[in-house]
Image (cartoon, rainbow, N blue to C red):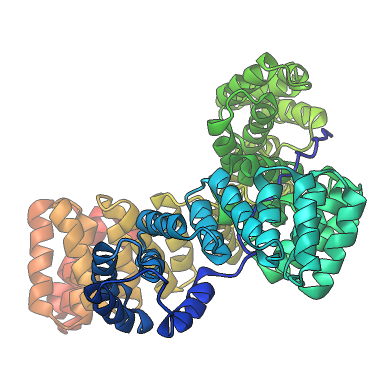
Length: 598
C-alpha cells in the first residue's frame, strides 16, 4: 500500500467580516435626507441639482440621481455632500472606478471622514488593490483611533495579505472598542497563519460558540489537522459540510484524511462530491481515481485518473495507477505497458516490478491458445495468471470464455461470476453470462444479465437486439419491442432488428404496426422474403385476404422456389374456406420444404 503526504492546507479567505455595503449605504441614505451643507458656499444651481438628485437617491434610483449630482459638483467643485452621494450612486450602479474617483475627491476636500475611508477600502479590496485598501483603513483609524470596525477589517486584511502579528493588535483594538463581530474568528485565522495552533484552537472554539458557521468549523478542522487530531478534524469538516454542502475544501481535506488512513470507501465519497462541485480540480481527480482503484472499482478509477494526468502528465504515481486500472479492466496491453513505462521513467516505486509481472505473460499465452482453439491450454494459462494476481477480472472472464468453448458451461458460469465478483461494473462479464444463460435456456437469468451488461456500459445495438430476443422467447413481447427499438436507434440500417420488431408486434396483436415494420424491411431489402411472408400473415389476421394474396403472389414472382410463399397462399385459402386451393398450395409448399409439414 502506498501512502501519500497530506498537502499543505491553505485556508481560503472569505470577505464576510465587515458590514455589507448595502447596509452602510442605507444608513447614508437616511443621513443625507437631513444633511447639513458644508461651510463652503455652494451656488444656488448646485443646491437645486443636489436636492433633485436626493429625491432619486432616497428612492434608490441611483442611475437617475447621477446626472444631478454630477451637475452639483460641476457647479460647486468643493461640494462635499454631493461628492459623497455621487460616489455611493456610482457604486450602486456598478461603476466602481468612478465611485473610487469621487470618494478620493471627497477626501481631498475633507480627509477627516473615517467612514468614507472605510468605504473606499472596501472598493479597493473589490479591485484586489490590497495595498491601497490597507492604507485607507489606516487613514480611517488615524482619524478615529477607536473605530472598532476599521480595526477588525484591517486585521483581516493584514492576516490575508500583510503581517499577522500586526493583525493581532487590530483585533484586540476592535474588541476593546466594542466591536466584537467575527473578531475571535478573524483572530483565530491570524494565529493559524502564525502557526500558533493551540492559541488559534482556543479562539476558534470561542468563535464557534458565538456563531457556529461553516467557515468557522472549516477553520477548526485545519487547525485540528495541524495539531495532529485527525478524528477531531474530520468531525469539524463534517460540521462545516452539514452547514454548507458546497464547501469544497472541507470535502477534500476530510477525504484526504480518510485516504491516508486507508479508508478508501469513505474517502471516495468526499472526493466524488468535490468532483461534482469542481470537475476541473485535477488534484482531487487523482485522489478519486486512486481511491476507486484501491476499493476495487477499477472501471470507475479510469476516468478521474485520465483527467488528473492531463494536468500532471509527469506524475509517475498517477501513470502507475492508471496502468493498473487499465490492466484490471481488460484494456489493451499496449496502454498498460505505455503507462507503466512512463511511471518507471518518472521513478515511481513499483512500476518496474509490475512491468516484469509473469501474470501478463501467462495472460497473453492464454489469449494465443484461445485464438488457436486450444481451449484447455488457454484455461491453464489463465489459471496461472490468476495465481500470480487474483484481483484481475479479465483473467476470470477469458477463462470463462475458454470453458464455454469447451462446453463446460458450469465452470464457464463460475468464471464469469468470479469476474463480476472482482468488479461488479465489468460489463463484458455480464454479457458473457447473459449469452451463456440464453444458450442454456434460462431466459429470465439471461434477461437479467443482459440488463446488467447494459447498465454497466455495454450499449451496442446487438446487445439490445439479443435482450429483445430473450424477452421474445419469454413471450414478453412489450419488453422485446422496447429493446428492438433501442437496437434500431443504435443501428438504423439493420433490417434484422426491424424484422424482429415486426414479429414482436404481430405476436402482441399489433398487426398494423407489424405490417409497417415489415414494409420498412422490404423497402431496404426487396428480397427479404420472410418479411413478405410475415406481412402476409399479419394481413390474414386483419382479414385483408385480397392484400394478403397479393403479397403471396409477389413472393412467388420474386422466388418461385420459396416454399413459404406457397404456404402463405395455403393459409389464406384456409381462412377463405377454399379447401381446393388450400390443399393445392400446401402440397406444393411441403414438396419444396418437407419441414413445413403440419
